[in-house]
Amino acid sequence: MPDEETPIDGDAGNTHPEDSSNRGINKMLPPQLIKVIENLPEEEQNVVRAMFMAVSVKESFRGPLPHPDILAKYNDALPNGAQLIFSMAKDQAAHRMELEKDTIRDQQKQGRIGQIFGFILGLFGLLIAGLCAYTGHDAVGGIIGTVDLVGLVGIFVLGKYKQTKDLEEKEDP
Image (tube, rainbow, N blue to C red; front, side, top):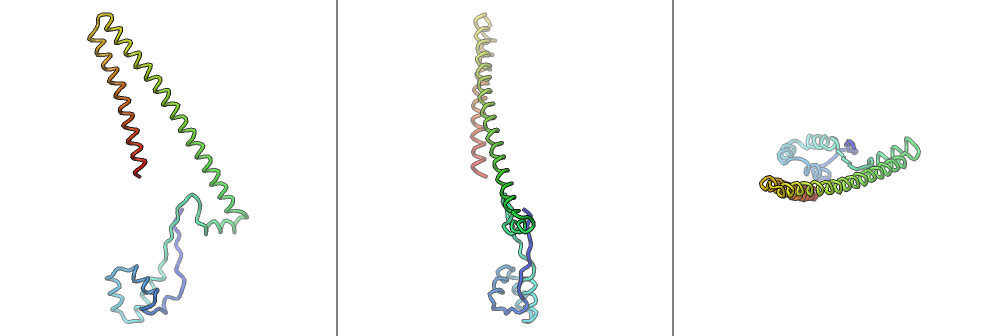
């Protein structure tokens, strides 16, 4: 939502240095500038303070919906304009939640399929290693079996490490 600037209303030129509005201005200004203003004649102090009061106030609003003032303007421009915006936001939120639900379901399905294929490949590798050892190729069987087991264990350890790291990143924004 873009920031809006609205001028401060009021007659700032008729202020006295002891007015509460001047104390508010003095809180916003750096001490060096306050000293400079206090060294000016009183009329010039009032003019300078009035200029600072007349600058502008910057208002910022963030959220899925427009600022309430803007929603009221939509109602002025279009009957039930704010209600239409609320309805659109509600529909969009429901759509996004459905997409996230589908994505999570698909990721879980892919994870299960990956585990099944990993298990099959691991068994196949161990079967090949056992077959090599059985036919007299002990060194080749040992190498294939070692690489197979180290690879499977490594994948599970790295997967768990990555999962833990992702959870930590989500918890610490």
